Image (cartoon, rainbow, N blue to C red; front, side):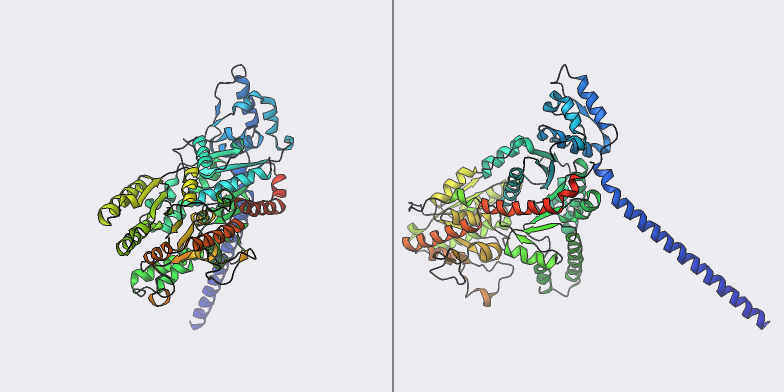
Length: 593
């Protein structure tokens, strides 16, 4: 009996071992097959996203033939889910690529361009890649808020201008969610606001319907996660509507990069204005008074996980660019596998710098900043009001002029609030305060050239194009002592050697810094003795002599002209395009799609 039990037990163990081996073998086989399948799927994915359907040229040819006697008639073709790949081919073949924008309604139907209807045979032949004499390259600029009129948009449009001037074969696709503005209106705004004139025939607008997915208002909870997921969907929408040859993210939506990489196999250029999440944010949580509370602990690990995701998506970047020393230092820590390069934003210093003859400037302090709370207009107004209250001679007080764009009704409401608050609560005289909204670039330049001081109060402003514009126009910058203005712009300058100096002295000063107790990182012991408040700074600068003002102005002007001109940005972007052409475009030119 005992022997039978032992035998049965051994048989059971053998059966269990065999079953276990069978399960492991099957699971391993499934895993290997799945891996091979996914690898093959990802390898062939571009054929689905970028290769047009069979006989699409025949459909286009026949459609144009039908209206040859009436070429003014509109012809719209629907290629279903393949419409993006067809639009891409039509842009590559067209005499005027701009005619293939998808319109403010973001239609999937494609209207054949008027120029191409008049040259049917040539156009249809060029739809065959092998028959194209030109080797067009589509640079896709992903910038959902391209019509916002801020510093980030200036980077976008200068990059577009430089890309188009690099080669007549380059075409710029602008992925935007500005569906309330036509392409003509947007380009007119670029000309008016930034004084950039583009070859409009080679600028194609791809309108996106779902920009709300990256709007912080859409995600009142878990905003970072919501915007990240939303940016993935928006990236896929852009790719679906028209896949480019090179992906240029000039606004900072990195979480779609893996999808760009796997679905299109194209190089990714990213221009980072500021990190989505940084070590500063994590340190701030760790050092907060309630760091051990459950809420802060959960938030810390949520941000920590988000940081790891941010690190991961950076591995798909081909070329990383940052706009300042502060941003570059952060991105080097986050995307440690990359070597981000700094290309300072284009600040049009050549257009702002006047001849060196002394000009009669008005006693005015200018604030050029979008009307958003983070620009800290309230801090400026409050400091100005306190200065007026404590000054003995009000006649020395400069007039304060606030200039900025308003992107939405909320921004306009904010301006109205500032007007009422400054008048009713702060009791600032209307003679000493003026608000100007949505000014033309010429108007802004005119105000800058006749003013004396320029103010920037934003905490950790990643760069600060407005500060550069102040210095280039001969204004004395009064800026917050952090990030871009501190590290890159209002730096000590040695005029005799025409280079940045090591120490900030009365002989090298190019502007003034301040801090405030409302700063998130304000340290009473460290900062109080080192930096004055803005209120105290007003008192200092109004007592400068004309000679002192002129010397500071001259040094600042020379510094920014050397570092931040449009030409300097153009040179940097040109080097990026050279790198793209050398390392990636040889692969693009041998494609069949």
